[in-house]
Amino acid sequence: MKVVLLGYMGVGKSTLGRLLAETFQQRFIDLDAYIESKEQLKIPELFQQKGEIYFRKAESLALQEIISKEDDFVLSLGGGTPVYGSNMKDVIEASGITSVYLKLNIEALVDRLFLERASRPMISHYTDKIEFEEFVRKHLFERQQFYYMADHILDVTGKEATESLQDLIKLFNQNT
Image (cartoon, rainbow, N blue to C red; front, side, top):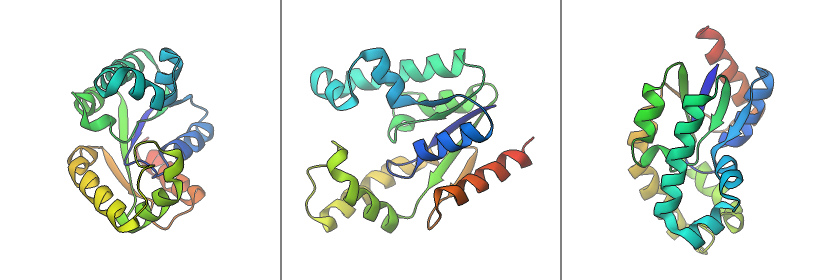
């Protein structure tokens, strides 16, 4: 079983990924944590010290390493991973991978992220919720074409993690 979860920041990719991996007794890999381990730097430090271009190259290399060398896993991508380079194409063309876009409506996404913004360097500077919502709408619009390339789309709006997990389990039980 090779599963790649993708979607915008804050949709629950890591939370659901851990739960799904535990359910199917697979290895869970968070791409950002994997990069941090390889680089010996936290993602914000990596951005600050080496820049976004370096980070995106490291991200693509890490993704390639995982999808080409690992046998079974549940992989959670960073929100921007599918957008850069050939990352989404690589996921789609990799043998045996099932990709799932976790979709959350814009209002719920903005509410969740605005509360979490202090712990997310990319959005921590926002103090006005209306301005923040404009940023998220624009960002999501730019990324959706990549997200919609996933094999499956799972709307997690208004659902607790356990309910979304059940939806994921049903999805994989139908495909086996």
